[in-house]
Image (cartoon, rainbow, N blue to C red):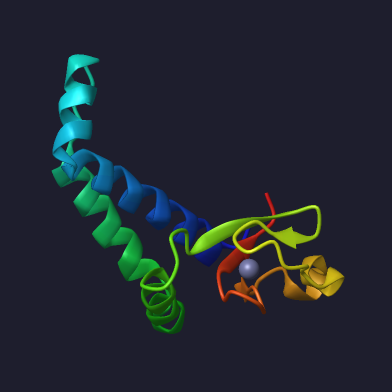
Length: 113
Ligand SMILES: [Zn+2]
């Protein structure tokens, strides 16, 4: 998979982990299960990965995540799993392998799982 896309997926996951960890109820619950989340480590990883994203994609990601819940979603059965709009079949062509593509309907960043 495209490295930029891998980073975007990873950043989305880390941000979700951080949000859960910083949610007081949730983190108390995780501690009772013996899970201690190292938020400093997550923040450091996030920072490093954000630096690796191309500025153009970084700007796009930051804009789209203010609008929608999950800015990076999978394509499933030819559809965006964010808004369920159809994705053109050309999306998965080899020519697009190294591009970061966006849903034409909701604007989310798409990947093929
Ligand atoms: Zn969509």
